[in-house]
Length: 264
Image (cartoon, rainbow, N blue to C red; front, side, top):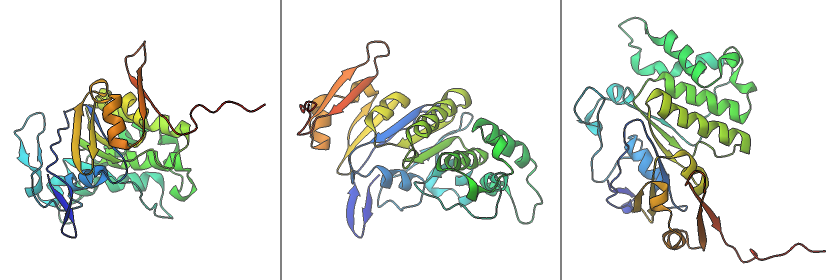
């Protein structure tokens, strides 16, 4: 896929695969094209060239860009970086928005809607918040509600654009645990943009490293996280070590004051 802004290519022939039921993290410095690529897959930004194909477990691959809006929304959903919470609505009502691809103006109600809304509330641990107004929620709680909204949409593919941004450490960990649960327990295919390299290594089965709109490397975190490669991509010295118990790589960006000692 090649994507352009105002006639200038910002993503260059990016080849990306999201394996079914796995978590794939897109990583790279600011301006590398991570979010642009994700939004283009979600049809929020038109690609200049390329294609997107999607398949369910019991069907052949189809051209996702040729699907109707409704059919596309039944296969792929995107949780964008920021959403405005509508005041005056309960959590259950907001989660119910996820059922929009299944509600037909002239065909009556959505019979599966109530069950799937309650399921989404349960999976995201927001059932106790269901009757609370969304304007009264914390940032972490609201992010869970948006997750529930996406789950209620009942798609095979979930795209997440920096879902941990603006959250404190606890909520970051809880959101990433939820991402892992969606793949492991519910078979959801997840593509997620993350800035934190260690978070990406911990949550993802595969990572895709981008630089200046091009895919530099793709594979498991252990395969992609090479110190020389990361240093070149981010323009700062990055050291890589591997956890002896899990084998998961850990990174350390080395700044000018990395040898600073504590003052007396």
